[in-house]
Image (cartoon, rainbow, N blue to C red; front, side, top):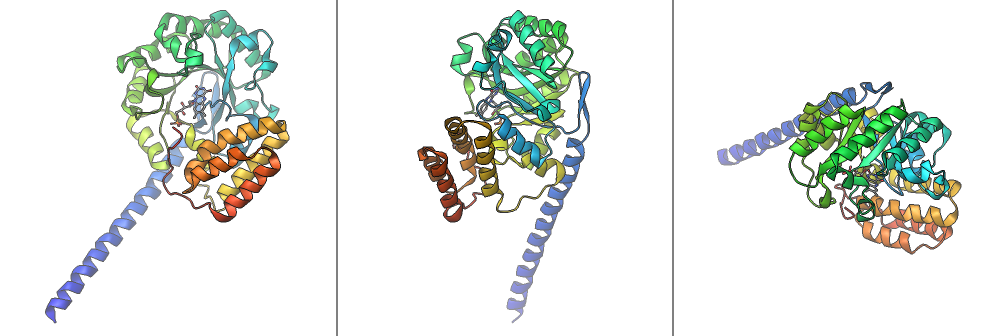
Length: 370
Ligand SMILES: Cc1cc2nc3c(=O)[nH]c(=O)nc-3n(C[C@H](O)[C@H](O)[C@H](O)COP(=O)(O)O)c2cc1C
């Protein structure tokens, strides 16, 4: 009998220990959330302007178009949005109609930064003047994209091989515009933290107002994890704001990046596609309901249809689905079915069918489309 009592007491004390641990973790999470949202909602000065929330939307080609930005913006909690990358030459030569990315809605301009790529300082400065004249919050320089089509033209991350050219570009733009200048860059082409630290100092000296830093070497794409400790080193080296970027997939990642690197803000890329409500959830305490996955997909499709012609709307939705599908247990099927839909009616049927039958959520985002 006494043996059974001892056994029950052990089970009860185990239960209590586990229960206390759960409460502890729950409290820690609440603490993280309240500390984090306090930090994220602290205003930040960038050049001659200010943002009120320190979570920002990363520039993403074929994703960060006006319909997607409208959806994110309606949730709230996003301090600044970066456009898709735009060719500085095309803008400077007034052939911007050829650029799918140089598009906006008037109401988003106070929060919108236009990202430019190019390699000619004069053309970049001319394009930046145009960006300023349209009323954008700022201009961002793409010194980070490592896709070969861009690097072959000496643009994107290829510029990091030539720091003197990078600073000439920034100085030329600084002389041309007064709106904030952002620089988005990577570690460089070798895995050595001294390289981004030196680059960051040069960018600041040349007139940049803020940096977005993605701590991966250029040939890396997204295979190996980014080295967040390099963000801390870059932050220490400059006095302008630094946004950390890379592999922030949940609120704990966000808190950890801020805590360990002391960065001034966090730039979200793929998680903003998979869960466009993340900005609102992390910075304003917004609580998504189960239907949000369906609502978001349907809403984006509606916005795309009203903004683009049918085939462009379909292509943009396919691109979105590649990342959005990462949240679902049967995401591979969702993505395949979305890609099979050849017109809007078929795509609507696909969405209805998927969300009625197969939309079981996977608690951990599947990074299938890295
Ligand atoms: C679909 C897609 C398109 C992207 N397009 C751009 C771009 O136009 N300009 C740019 O600087 N970075 C671009 N990036 C890189 C992101 O801005 C970001 O640096 C990268 O996704 C890492 O952040 P994450 O881990 O939060 O996704 C793109 C990324 C994705 C997934």
